[in-house]
Length: 47
Image (tube, rainbow, N blue to C red; front, side):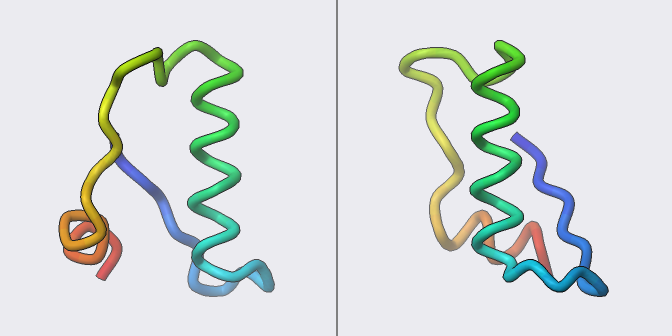
């Protein structure tokens, strides 16, 4: 799962991640039992 963070957004990073997870669930891109990245993996991805 790839997250795209907009550093110029007024929304906090955690809110942007939450929005993307919710959207991916609604669109069927994130399915039951699919693992999310660990905190460490996520930190590497968004920096």
